[in-house]
Image (cartoon, rainbow over all chains, first blue to last red; front, side, top):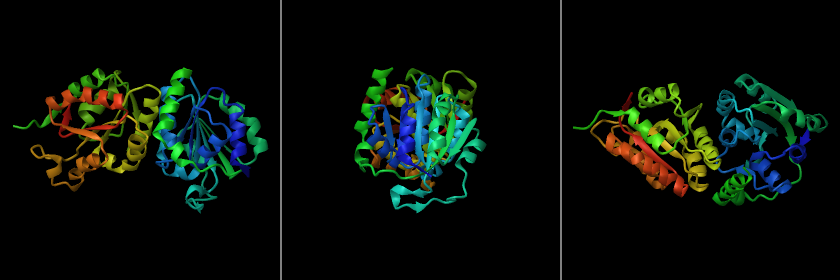
Length: 189
Length: 170
């Protein structure tokens, strides 16, 4: 089992100029590790991170879009896998942190905990590339190869929480944060 | 006498006038023949087909922050199913989500609030309660309001909803 923050560090090492959409605790960890203006967060309407990511990917086809999703979040918007695979943006990379629970809501188990294959769901939804990792020593070296593939790419990462991050949901959910992101992206293009 | 169908080409022209690039849609029988099929067959817009309407709120938001205009084309049942996404993203995160909402089953001569359909009666009160600008399109005068309503939404970064009160014809 990997720590979520270690996985995020491994992804960030190869971020380049990518835009990142991150949800709930993945977003809070991302903000702690790399508070880039090109981070966007989704924590106000659970499940919407993957769909935000699709809109971003369609809007900036010249730039990679990384989605840092949660397993509970994805279960609330499973159809988005099919929608993303159908739209087929080559620049979309969907990482799902699979901790098996609704961590932000009391760590209750997700339905299907331990039996569900998220990588299998993505593969059957039509993602041309779908991976699953549970060891950092195997995942970290693969990140460059994953990000070199044409998307949409999916990777399920079996994790436990790492260091706790500040729970500043008011900031990550704010309209100001979205405006900052929008301005930063415009300036960067 | 009230009109009983709305001209799809006029709505498409209004969307083009408002610089809409993307149509993000779940099929709705009210707008299927007159809007979604012509849009799907034409090349005026890029069509994103969704599995569920709430996805579209976020897809449109992602497009908006990257500088692209989109319209979410759905049925009122899908609007009702998407209230939390609309609340969180369109309202609280102040995104210009522009919705074209088919009012399935609305009676031609009755305002939606007076419909026999409970689902139709609550659409406008919910939008009003959420502070979302809305108006009903029953014919050409309503279509004429659409480009300016979309412009206002993007200028103010606020959501809007145009309610399609009659079947749209090709």
